[in-house]
Length: 85
Image (cartoon, rainbow, N blue to C red; front, side, top):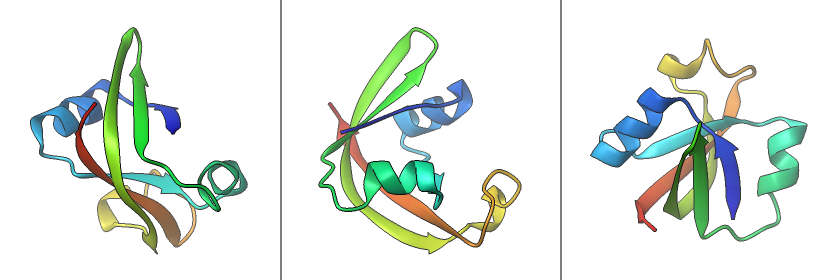
């Protein structure tokens, strides 16, 4: 399981079904938490609000254009989200 913080507007979009992927940088911090492990769920923490979702897949992709200002580097982890827990 992965646990991470998230901004309220992004969590709102995930809950509404608008956002189907969460993107995380391919850096040492995330590599240690993602690679070589099987993740079935992700927990998003937003203040006192905590929501869990199933993880369908995690792949390494090129950073999407709309995330280039948020993620350093050319590659990132794309976490495909399933239904809520």
